Length: 494
Image 1 (cartoon, rainbow, N blue to C red):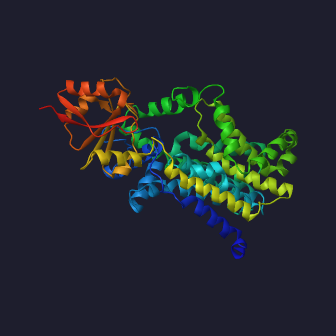
Image 2: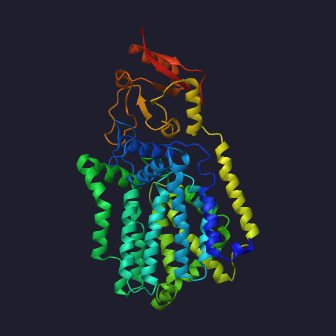
Image 3: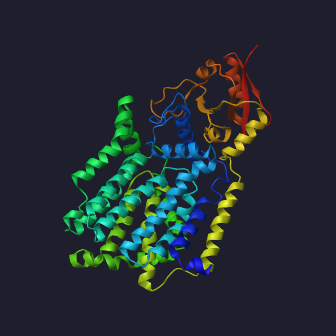
């Protein structure tokens, strides 16, 4: 242990790797989010179509750009169709973020890099998010890479700052193909910082070479799918951008107090165990900011603190004003908070707590991570797969959910090639892109597909059975209900 502690870089890397990879595949896919992203990625592998995200053979899935799906599909192609492989891109994004926290702190406050990396690796929220399949960790990794490139261009005595600015634009392009315009949030931060600290023209962000590089990397996928799917551009801009930002259409805590309800607990609990350090920095922030307004020299002396404050507070303000609010939206802000923690410790003459206390916290994190495998939840697609296979022996090629939440995680748990559909009892005039239902009951029955298992809510079972009977088929329940759902097959009525 003593020999290991003599190498902070090695010790930090080992700590972060254990936190990222231990028990990564110990629990099943949790719907809806993990199942949805994994299902789309597997559909890309099954169909060979890596351009158009799809939730099944008939219906596209256009809520997000494709980079997350590409990462999951590539991981599954290499390591097999299992939960460990599906979660690996998020875990690797966490490890990249730990390394970037180290690099950024080393440039802004040499000597604090070890503390910054450990602070990030052990914060509750980044650690927990690294075990979830979402777009947010890839987004966080790319935006942090962009900020690191800007830090190197602005603060390092580098002979070629333009190369760092080029890297920043590459990272922004990757973020844009991960989550669209949300990936550009570092841009206002660095532009405002450049405005407040003029000079050093070679470090400027808005260079034609960088913009062209961004366009070449970020735009081809968008141009291809817009051309192949008329009306998709209007849907992206209208629904996925404007409506998410300005309305409560998506049910993402749009109330005026929503930011208090979602973001305050995320910041307080998510930064444990380093929340007290961040609170001390927050209390001293007004006194630090006041001299910046009229004193350019003071801004120059405090340039590191100014950049971190802008990196944290400017996006946070936008997130609070926007009407769509979710905890994971704040994930990209935890790297600057980790660097702030390390620099605050250095300012106070403190360091990391003893390795015994740190080891105890890491042990608690790992125990919590292992315990999630036994957490009882109706969202666990692994339990659903076991229940279906126990009731429907033989091959299962398709699962049809009748006016119920589709468990897309079954695609991975039941094996590649399994189709998951969500249908309605009645014919609906639904929107073209990302409709709530794939098709009505009558159309699904008319397809006469084999090896199909159906699921509906137990309360809806009499109605579903009657409707199926009305179309000349018979609904046969398979075993006892599971999670207040009836699992059944549909047969032609003889």
